[in-house]
Image 1 (cartoon, rainbow, N blue to C red):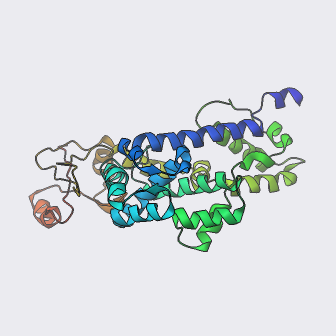
Image 2: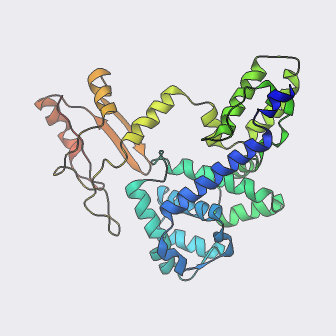
Image 3: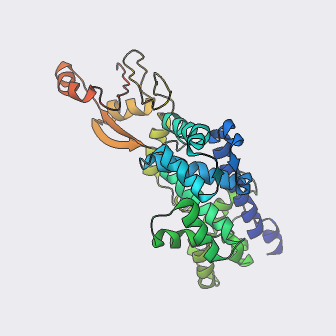
Length: 326
């Protein structure tokens, strides 16, 4: 048993792998979204921390998704004390560059359309880290001051996320699970999945492991829980949206610019879309990609084109179009 435990990923190694992931997510968001000119603003000392910066950027993007004005967001940041100066300067050097980048390219990472998901993740990680440094009452006060969560229920769910969910894992559960390498993308979650499998397989200590596993699962972020319960249909759906990254041509990205038309610049549809239409028979669906509504429709002849023509007229948000010949 000792040799097997020596080869297992211990709980502290799982914590280290998770912390590397948290730091990596924060750096990715900051590197992609933080405007260079923002450093000329009067920034609070908290924003020296990449997690605070990433949370601020996700907050700006989320407020745009909810159709708050850029001036209103700047005033909120100034009132909270995170960013000093006149709202006009905060809009020019911080809020507007972030909003423009997210509207055009989405948020960092493969789930470029998921502004809300990034915002929830950063809120959970920020709350968990803050909870180990200051009393809970102060955490709640700062949540309301800086990020304005929508309800007491949301605050309660955020406080449930743990900074170190693996702290309570018993060594015997590690020994019962198959070992995994201590490196790689979310090796800690792969190890946790093996622990869950070992628990379900039963054994003399299975009942004693239940509380520990329940505590760990409750302390993970929504994103981590989804990774543990990854579904093939969800994975395929996300893969389809990811394939559309960068497919839209924008005529301009100036102040208040909206997506442009692709009529002059037709691009081929991605292979997954051709498979869905030609092999799978897909014809029409409606959804959204981040802050933009998304319609998918297939036409096969002149009559179909005539019927679809009203859908292709430019409105307040101009349409982008992809096409292919089978």
